[in-house]
Image (cartoon, rainbow, N blue to C red; front, side):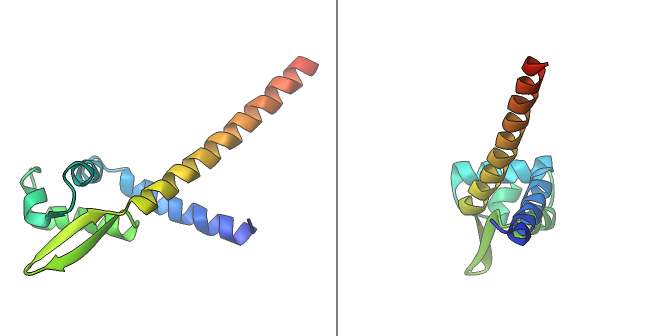
Length: 113
């Protein structure tokens, strides 16, 4: 993969992980993964915050590509975007493989000494 493409993927992953770094946003994703698509009103019932507060968190998740919002009548209905979540998992797997490779090289070096 070209260096520019790798840098772009890492920048996208950084946005994803920043969005996941908030307990409320993680709880929203958990709720959407368990219950499926939900309106802001329904989601707000589970949190001690206003619908506007929930909406702000959903917009952060949307920018990171983790949720999609659609208008259904007068309501906005939000659903998870599992494709982006899978991309984050691939990024973590890549990082983990890098650590595994580094530890293997260190072990080989120590054994040679």
